[in-house]
Each structure stands twice: as structure tokens, then as C-alpha cells.
Image (cartoon, rainbow, N blue to C red; front, top):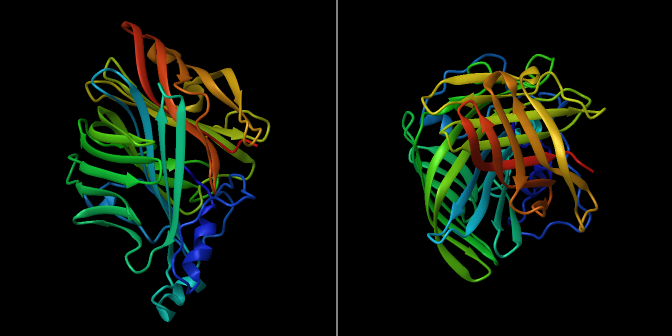
Length: 379
């Protein structure tokens, strides 16, 4: 479950006008996260049935649906052990039927708006840097194609090939203070989330997404922070999701965990938070063991207990940044803590997303791991 937000409507304003595309700093008056639940379809398709994913086609764009994202996160280290985390995300937002009908009026006009986020966590340097791109899907400024595979927003991109369960990509992004040049290669089969790729998040028909993950991508390349460049390697995770309307009214946000454990298991779980702070019954995830055995997780299978909070000096929002995650049926209990408490992205969409480490016990004894945590919808 990822980034079901309408902040891309801000990019839609850029996409709809006839002026040159702009790169801009985040606005002084930022909006909070706004969930996609409750939107009208406006002529877009809805996810209503399981999907047999086909690759490389499904690595590309699905413009019949309103919202889509390609979400890369990972933990990296130098040969000496210096730790970094990274996030590089591409979002596509389809405009309404009336806007799509006027796409040919100007070379600058588009029927898709695009946004990208790029963030780096430098644990030893106690630095977290996040940047943003907003543009339109016109004049080759942004897009996603599957043959050859390329996803891009301006000069930030993921390019490569992805037939079957083989995925090889080059990530490239650069801004004033951070840069990434990273080679990714899948080391395990892709994972269809939910019911065979249909991930239901609400009671209404079509309140669901098509969702798959690539939980283990071997990563190697270079990362730059504030003028220092490091040779790094590690593990990355790719989440892919597209939908039109996914959340029920009354869902305030979510807490999303993606963990790569030292016993070879990979765990994804998201808690959809209700207005009262409880867990929606539509929360869920998967646990994939080293031998590829996949167990679907439902809300009743997982216990989440906040352990530590952090308050942002910039936004004054309090986030639960450390958790105890337990799956009794799998014999798994983990304490998940951030590498840095301050990993808030205060951009057009405000949320906390950061590199985390895990420590606890699995069915075979002591267990550690690392991954990423997202906290969305807090204010």
C-alpha cells in the first residue's frame, strides 16, 4: 500500500496550462496528505478483479487508471560500513475526462501529471535531504514505457529491462545536494500483493489497487551527499501500484513497513488507520520466506505497538517512528527503529519515510533486518 494521495493534483495544474513546465521549490503553504478514497471515477478504470501480471508490460504505465507509482527504497553501505538510505519515487496522475479530451489543444497540454521524490539518509553524517520534481506528461518531460523499460520525470529516471521475474535497472537522479547512480538487479521472483494482485483497501467495489513488489534488488553504484561521493552496495525494494479509488471514507492514513530480514525473508505490511486510531480490517501484507513460500497477512495476523515518537521541528507533527511488529502465527517479533528520527519529507506531500533497522526473534532464533517505514496522514 503506497502513496494513495491527491497531491498530484498540484502537478495537474501545471500539466493543464500552456506555459513551459516548471521546476519549483515546495510551496510556503504546504498541504497535508490527502487520500484518494471517495473520488469519483471520472471515466477511469477500477481495480475489481485479480490480475495475472505480465512483464515487462506491467512495469510500464497504465493510463486507464487515475493514479500510479514506481517506488524504490533501499539501504546501502560503503565497504567500510557507512550506512545510507535512499528513496526515489515516480508518481503519475491522470486528469479527468474533460481535460483528457483537450490534450491536443497545445503541445504543452497533457492528460497526465507527474511528480517525483528523491531523498537520501546519511546516518553517520546525521543528514536527511529530500527533493521534488513536478511536471506534465508532454514533450517527453515525463513518462513510463516498457520496451525498452524507462520511467522518468525530467532528468530523474529508472531505465533497463524486465522480462518475467528478471528485472535490471539503472537509477539516476541528481539535485543540488544529492545524487544517485545505482544498478539494481532482482534476486527473487516478484510478489503479487493481496488476492493475486488485487489489493482491497475498502468496502466499496473498486476500492482496491493492482499491486506487486520486487522485495530484493541487489544494489551497487554511487551516492553523493553535499559534494561527497561514495561507492555503495546493498538491497533495494520496488513497490508498484495503480488504482483509481482505493480507500474508504474515515481512513486517515497508513503505516507501511517493508523489511528484508537476515534469514532471507521479506516482509511487507501496512496498517490503514481509522479516524479513532485503530487498524482497518482492510490492512494487510505478505511474508515471503527465503525459499519463496508466500503467506498473505491480514489485519488480525499482525500486532503493531508504537515504541517511540518524534516531533518535527519544521512542521510540529508527531510521528511514531519506532514500533514493535509481531506476527504470532509466524513466530516473529521485531523492534523496528529508524536510522535517523528526522526523515520527514516536507514537500508538496508531507509524510515521514525513512530507513529503518529491525531486531528481534524469528522461528529459528535471533533475527535482524533493515528496510523502510512510511508514516502518512499525520497532522
